[in-house]
Picture (tube, helix red, strand yellow):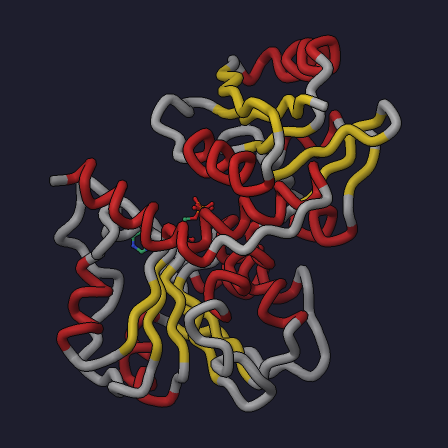
Length: 282
Ligand code: ATR
């Protein structure tokens, strides 16, 4: 069989997903294609009709369709329903089923280099309360780790995030950035999910790391640039760092599993994608 896969979103001309899934198809020894379907969001139902006619097996969804696509699918996975967002769609028996692989993909990307980091004693600080933070927060609480605090510019948004998926057994507190800066040394892991520091604003950093402990792992989901100012600062202070492009690869790995049933070993691609991104930026 020849797999027909793709991505819908706007704009997606610079997406790394074709590179990623071409590597996955090769690794799996499967014949297939991964195409970009860029469309106007007014026409989402037409795009979906077109994809069905094309005989597509599955596709990824990115900005700005992640939330609005929920209304056009036949079935939604439980996690995606609670998050209100879908990034992976599979055609099963003629029906569209939507999933969210961002949060679980993030966890996989983290446990690959740090296999013992997440457990019931781990204390995590999540920076941001947007769509990406929602997926990661949900995946973290499903891991039943000890504490997940959230700091966000809008405190109300962080409170709403927590209220939408309260989970017994995990301690959570909402903090201002100022409070987070003060307590920074208490965390085992800090995850940066805001857009601060993203190209072209590469000299911006969402909070000061003055009180950072060198035992803390600092993770930034921004991957343009690959070395954000926050990660550089953390590294200069002796902390371990985790780059954002790894999440992109692992959410793709999970999507690929849903489409093809193949569970791939992709560890070596983390470095390859890093090289590609650094090459593009030099
Ligand atoms: P995504 O889907 O990538 O998470 P989003 O849902 O638009 O994007 O969320 C963006 C996040 O970045 C939010 O947490 C936002 O903070 P607010 O909720 O207070 O708006 C955060 N963010 C964006 N620009 C910011 C800035 N200049 N300083 C601090 N936080 C910022």
